[in-house]
Image 1 (cartoon, rainbow, N blue to C red):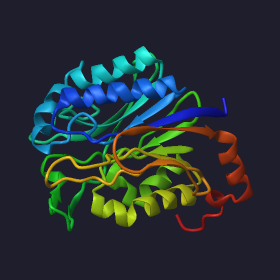
Image 2: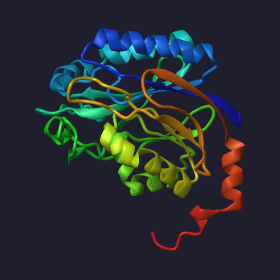
Image 3: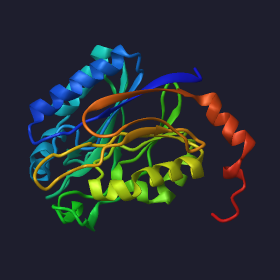
Length: 277
């Protein structure tokens, strides 16, 4: 199947997990009703409060994590694949427990609710930003992942990344070398960094690797000190923005045609022209 419908959900998540999951359910239903076959959620979709990440991570390390179970149930009920942004998890993919920290994990569920894949965020956001929050130190709570993850779906081969990963082109090139045709970027980009760099980085990653990019961002005011940029979007392999949403909650539907990607790569076979590796 060369053509399929992708949905991106943009949220303004809070510290209320039940409310956040209710909004996820609403937008997944909306996406499925619009014909979506694959749905992407943003980073921190279930909880926008780092202080509780350790507790949530401990619960999600269980074989039947409650939030993962909820998302798996949505995937099965609505008959869609879901790429579930990020969730804290106090267990590594090999089953080893994590002492004192958690990982930021992106889980993929198929339309039967089965777990297909897990990607752990490799690059952690330890930076100073000129906003009300100021200093972000993700590594105080999160342990970095180390494995590039590219998976097959019924429609297209998908590479997984999370937020700050976007600033590291070597990760995206590694995914392209493993056959990625679509790369997902669930995020919680701050307003300041998003306004400066978000679209530029997304379009660059699409162009240089000749892949579709699907970027689901948080999009609004979460508290007195936290504001995210929004502007979730789908970008084609030529760097064109196919669909987008500025701020607030919502869903984007976009039809992706794998033949378009193959045409771009045939006309300009950049990946085969590389001289330095």
